[in-house]
Length: 112
Length: 116
Image 1 (cartoon, each protein chain N blue to C red):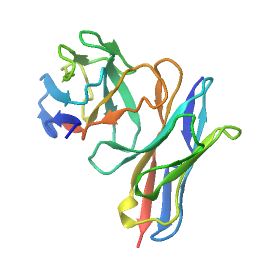
Image 2: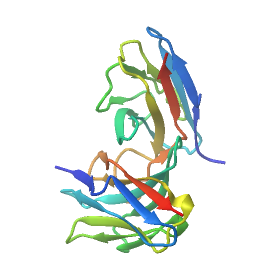
Image 3: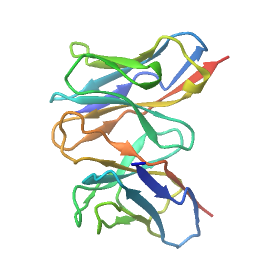
């Protein structure tokens, strides 16, 4: 069965420190993997996507993610957090056929 | 600018009323979707449409209805049969519903529905 697990429901960092949001997936097929960000009362904005090209994917706003097939992980990172990064982040897997699976979300808090 | 437009942003429904949320896209996408998001929770699929005049139930279709008469439009009606409709509703679209490399889903800004 296909699934997505975001390992932390909340992550809190200080401004200027690194961000790590963790995502593990399970898929019988070669998946496409995405990270989206959602600010309060807004839609989901695409941060980055992996589609079987380079395993290290760079996205917008300084975020990047690394696809690790052996670990079935797609963790999102940023070297230095900014106050504007405070939001909810969703890891998403699209598997074979038609099936889009959303993670439960990780809320990122950034302290001044 | 290309994108997905949802309206209204905020909507209040009285008990027993049907309400319709609008979703329009100018991305020339074949597939469109409606998701429901409850506070602090992830997204759940209500309905999706792969092409005009065709749509399929998602995981939580009860109490909702949709139509797809035009490629760019996919309105969602929340009927009185939906007992707990207060939520944030997100419309989305993609080039097609079949997976393939880079079949990205794009989202609208969402609509808040509250029962009063």
